[in-house]
Image 1 (tube, rainbow, N blue to C red):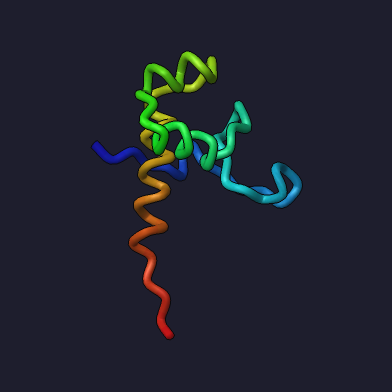
Image 2 (image 1 turned 90 degrees about the vertical axis):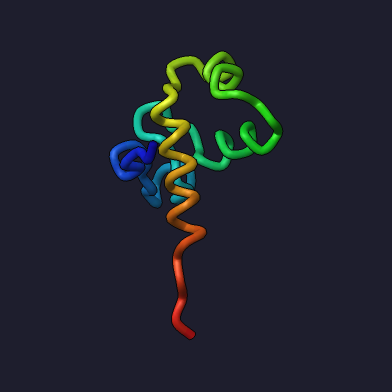
Length: 74
């Protein structure tokens, strides 16, 4: 089920040099995706990163999906 990632993810130049991160805990999206790529379950990730929610993890995936669907006109 898609999650509106814009509710959870921000990018600000003065925080983490503009890398996309989760609002609140300032966890980089790339960190969450790295855990998922390594085969970690949502429960494993939440155990490693207290305060993280399943919705935030889903938002990271939806954000990545939107990036993958982006089409550049050349």
